[in-house]
Image 1 (cartoon, rainbow over the protein chains, first blue to last red):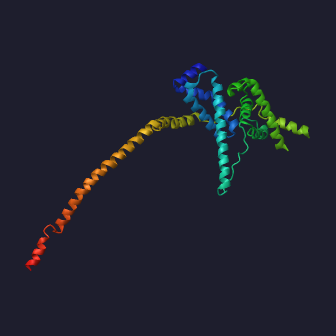
Image 2 (tube, chains in turn orange, red):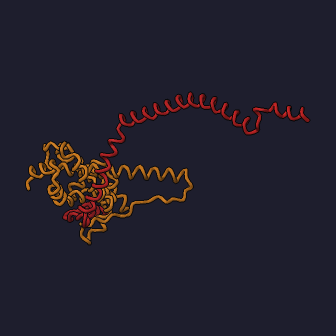
Length: 187
Length: 111
């Protein structure tokens, strides 16, 4: 099934086309989401939301970009939304702790181990993920797509709706920030 | 010392190079299907029920019915109370034989 047939099938509400879409892209969507949210259950939630959104809004997809680009865009947006809601919940929890009875502990996110990283690199990768979590959203997105999904700067620029030089700049700043964060960690 | 630190940082920065794609847990499609059945079907029902026009129409109908019940019920009630009062007086009078209460005096007079 080529992309045009797939999109047509999705528009017609064809279940086989939808299953083919999920089978083809589920790991890419999940891997992108897990890189950003750094939690397996949340990443699966995000992946489900991505496919539900595709199902709902396939009629609005104009086909100007590749289907994979569109999916990456939805996945990163949804993953970042989840991070934002997690952050506001955490802030609310902190306020509750300040003004409440103070018995509830603040939940710190434990070290994240990406399932695709080789065993001898897991410790370093956990440190890197901890540092990635502190990056601004657009740097985090660019770095994750490049490192985990192996996307080129051109592809990242299409996903993020920006230019290639802008992505180069984002990656440069992301690496600089990561170095600074890691320097503090190592000291 | 600095060299060591820099090489350690570079090592950490490169730790994701060549990593494999994380595979989604098994039976993802089954769980997705279940969630879609849950989310997509009630949404259409909800959206119809939650339309402002529908809610406004229901509100107007409820208000009109209330007004009708209050005003119509009030006039009926006044009439009913009036007739009810007459009936009650008559029945009480009949029960205690108050209608021919003069007879009591008659009896007394006879004595």
